[in-house]
Length: 279
Image 1: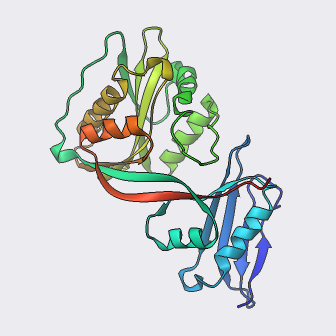
Image 2 (image 1 turned 45 degrees about the vertical axis):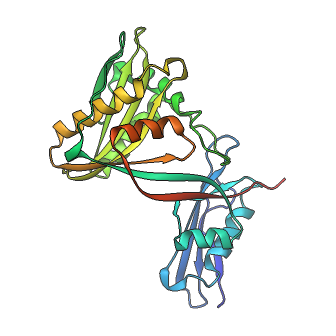
Image 3 (image 1 turned 90 degrees about the horizontal axis):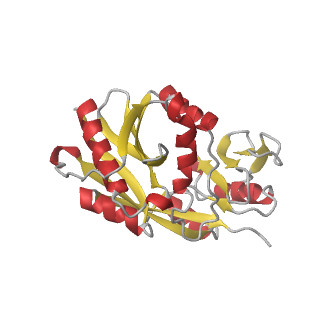
C-alpha cells in the first residue's frame, strides 16, 4: 500500500502534526509531538485506524516525527503490557524505559486512619487554587521533580500560577472536578499535596493525578496523612464514588508502600517506550 505522510503544521514547530493518507486520500493515521521547553524528551502520540494497522502506517509516522525533533528523544504514551501498542513499540525499535503499575482502591471497604503530623495543617479545595495559596502551591510543585522515571529522558515540569489555573480550567471544561488536599508547614508554605479528579456526577472511579512532598519535609508521614485525608473528604463529598485509581512507577518504592498500606490493589501494568536521542 502506498502511504503519503503530510505535515499539517510546520515540522520545526514545538507541536508538529502529521497525517498519513492512502493514495485515494483516505486518512490512515496521525502523529502528534509536543516538545516542552528544556532538554527532556518530546511527547509522541501516534494513532492509526484499526483497519490500517500492521501495514507500515505507524512506522512511517514515527519516522516523520523522529526526523523533525532535531535528535531529541521521543517518549511514547503508556501502552498496556502485552497489547498491540507494545508490539508496535518493540517492532519499531523503541526502548522500554519505565514500567507503571496501575492500582485501584475500593472505597466501600476503606477503613484506614492516619495520624496528624505535629506543626502541620491540612487544607482542601475544589477547582482552582485560592489566590492566597497560589504562589506557595506553584512552588510546592517541585516535590515532583525527583520522582523516579528510570531511564526515560524526562525533564521536570515548570509550574507557575498561570499554569495551575490553566490545568484546573481544562479539567472543568471536560466536566470533571479537581480536588486538591495540601499540607501547610509551620512557616506557612505548602509542604506537599495530592490531587484527585472525579467525574462531574460524582460516580464511577476517581483518578489520582499527583502526590508529592517536598524533600525537606519527607520522613514524617505527610504523604500517608494527605492521602487518607483526601480519600475521606472525597468519600464524604461524593458518596456514590466507587473507587480511586492510581498509577505508580514500579521503582517509586515510597509511594507504592503508601498505596499498598491504604489498600490499593494492582489491576494491570503499562510500559513507556522511547526513541532515544541521536548523538
